[in-house]
Amino acid sequence: MNFADQIYSATDSATQDRAQAIRDQLRDAIVDRRLAPGTKLSEGEVGTLFDVSRTVARAALQMLSFEGLVRTERNRGAFVANPSPEEARQVFASRRLIEPGIAIAACGRVTAADIAAFKAQLDEEGRFIAERGPNARRSEIRASGDFHLLLAAVAGNAILQRFMEELVARSSLVIALYGRSGISACGHSEHTEIVGALGSGDCGRASLLMLHHLDHIEADLDLRVRASPALREALDF
Amino acid sequence: MNFADQIYSATDSATQDRAQAIRDQLRDAIVDRRLAPGTKLSEGEVGTLFDVSRTVARAALQMLSFEGLVRTERNRGAFVANPSPEEARQVFASRRLIEPGIAIAACGRVTAADIAAFKAQLDEEGRFIAERGPNARRSEIRASGDFHLLLAAVAGNAILQRFMEELVARSSLVIALYGRSGISACGHSEHTEIVGALGSGDCGRASLLMLHHLDHIEADLDLRVRASPALREALDF
DNA sequence: GCAAAAAAGATTGCATACGATTTGTGTATA
DNA sequence: TATACACAAATCGTATGCAATCTTTTTTGC
View 1 (cartoon, rainbow over the protein chains, first blue to last red):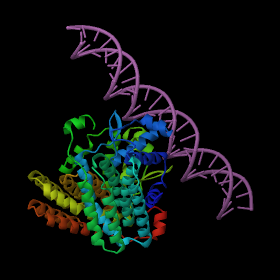
View 2: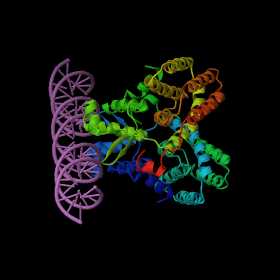
View 3: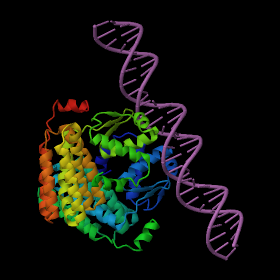
View 4: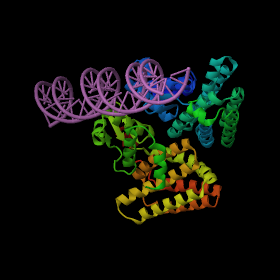
């Protein structure tokens, strides 16, 4: 368990019900792309899978729907979200607006312990990049997201942290869908640079590096529509 | 019905179930302070009030909980949120981070029809300020929030728009709790200035005006804790 | 053989029921 | 009188059942 996960637990596992636990597992599966976009998530299926009633499964799906990871259609069911290129652009526009500010806030509050946590996070990223295979690639995307979540946690604004959780999760979907290549190594080095700026207290540089980093990630996406947009939508692709 | 409401409906009323309708009514009541912070919202009570089963009432309360307008405690129930001063600061920190960017985005996309809608919105604000009495004051806070929501709608980013809906709703709570005086007239004139900047295409100025506007709103709050902070927290005040 | 209509099947929307947990009250005892 | 215990009331957490809606398949007519 890495540090971001710990923070995550600290925020969420103090919670109430089984629905949240199911939501977390489903979210992980979606973000890791074990559940492909468009996959149907029927209440009954989810319920039996996690050994709870439809009531609880339904609550979990509702939460994911709020986060934008699942799309529900009345009387039809829930499906893993399939973000359109336009949605993808909006996700990154939102991140470009928010994350430079988060970097500045984090820079103003970062402690030595935080820096150590960042270093550990970077190490983990490096390990996944060194590995090969589809599983490593999944872990890579996830670890990259965890870096941004850790930054948001350090920034110390719970509201922005939750926004970032949503944006990072949706970004993972977008990257899995539209990602072109191995931004990974490049992204990793940029993460390292950002941590460097944080460590040396250069907040302006951290903010600017973050902005460029996001630009690079988005530049690696192929957001051209493949088929007719109307058709794609009609077919749920 | 003003323009922001229309956009709101267009976004949300195309939705599915009665739970959302109930959520909207409850949210309005909370934002308008007809439901005071700390008020208990029992599932059964809400259900009978809206003539639905607890299942539906529960779903509505869950949604409000996600938006931060309601706080739920396991086996105890749901309560209208009672944001702490720290939470209030985080709300405004988030808005200072996001809204100047939204102003720029809106400035780049604003149409003549949008400007007309802004003017209508400003007129409505002015009417409420001219009126007196507690109801007028409520309407005033609401209208002021609607201005910001309209701006977010014009900006054209659905994700940021949703974030703003949450932030504006929570701000209304915060202002109702910690607001000191009549920022109203001052806020109104600032709104007018922002629309002016939008109309003349001066995006930088619109962004800056927004930032100052938010600073003014927050400066009007009295965020000093009244009793011992630990006690207040323990007592949920 | 093909298209349209009808029936069957599956899934959600919602209500209700029951057990579990918490809170409030009353009584007995020190 | 104050405290501790026990019981009762209220509320939530969850499961399940039925009706409504949508999808798919089968049947029927041309």
